[in-house]
Image 1: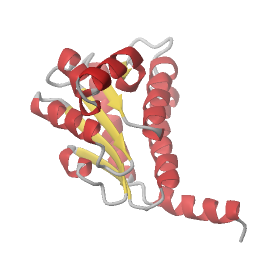
Image 2: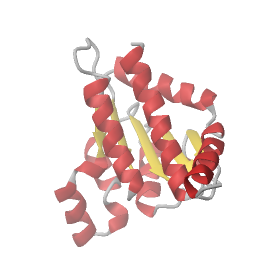
Image 3: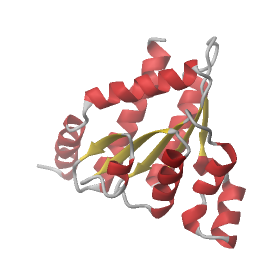
Amino acid sequence: MTFAEQYKTELLTAIDMIDLDKVHQAIDLFQQARSEARHIFVCGNGGSASTSSHFACDVVKGASFNRPERFKIMALTDQLPTLTAYANDVSYDSVFVEQLRNFAQPGDLFMGISGSGNSPNVLRAMEYANSVGCKTIALTGRDGGQLGPMAQLNIGVGVPHMGRIEDAHMIVCHMICYYFMENK
């Protein structure tokens, strides 16, 4: 089997691990947030930061454009000056939670993405989101790390390979976004 064939085979295994009932629960949380005009926050590091930005873009444009109800979503990863100011002057662990302190309200929705489930800055943001009464979703890999059990809804991809975890997370994000693009 070639490398590409092996990767594809193992990716399909990772995709099969996605709990579709949990994806539907996430869709319901996003639908509720939109209908109640709640804010939605998403964040992650590295590849998960890119997934956060991509997801927010898809939701802001694709799932909101020309629609009577629009999503109020913000990728905390996209606030580069704020990120670097907190990372430099306070700590990298604070880059997401300090943004939430400015914006998050009870009933808002927070989604943290971490392949390991152990990113300290995402953990701190999840902890804060829970403490102020946000609804919380985690996208995790492997065993969910510390993040999975902290979230009210954890969509885990229980494989060890970070690339396949990130691939599956993007698919979950597209499932959520395209539900609204194609159905509502």
